[in-house]
Length: 383
Image (tube, rainbow, N blue to C red; front, side, top):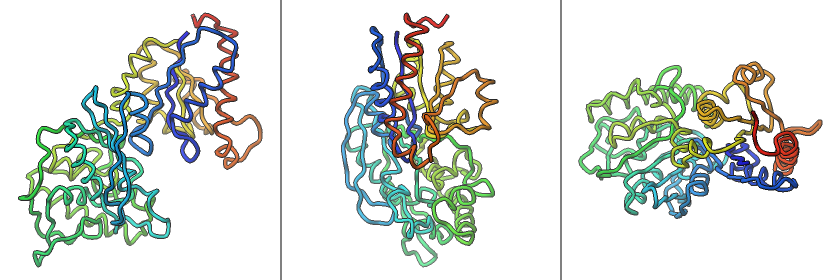
């Protein structure tokens, strides 16, 4: 019997590979023999994406020093997959909210410059297919910082160069792309699972900037800046980014990269699943176990579990979902999709206690799961 473990992270407590490791420990504590346990921890572009992909696909991690969201140097990873010719980058490491003290969080004054430096480094290493995960960002600069790191100059009315931060979007009078260092021959894929446009009520500023420390006044300024930026980008590149699907994700980074670098925005979970050859693993597995910290109505819309469920449905394979918490409103959806879901809590417990003991609780759940399938389906046959 083959059991595939492919969870997402349990945010705030365990990375995805720590979740799958706890599951393996629980399953292997059972006395049933002959089980093949395969770990393919997942991510959808946020924190932990680089390590999850490198662990699942086989590769290595290279560390580089780049400019952080507040202009100070930080260390960020490049995951390289030599067999696939792919480099994987994580925006959260170069321009992430977790790198900023809460008192200093404000997307008017943060930059994606370090992401551009990471792109250059991956290109220098010889990689021509570059995957960028954009979850967990601290920015709202439309990708202005990325492009500045690659040689684009953003000038004000006096012809002076502007820093690549959200606060300066409205001040751009001209974009000088003559110094742009093209990443010739590179295919840049942005892992993005939202459809928000660059600006407006559903855009980067109004939907996401408040989570990054922006006040209502900041949000209005940023949205105005993104509107102006879209017009300037079109004037300079000839490419409209106003209604680009996903253009508002991660502070609009995809819009600038789409117009000037030819980057494509693609489904994060589908992209990661392809890199890990997960469909093939699902096809040859008897049980698939996935999960995330909180399973709610959003779980089956563009998130890790949704991608796994689509493949399981395609190949008629049983999916079991594990969570730190189950939102009661998700049960009708679980019934509709015929997906059993379990919480790791084994009694009255606070969220803080659950997060602190997450490894043990996941392991204990896996022990019970192993006893169940080992006793009821000793040969792995669910029919």
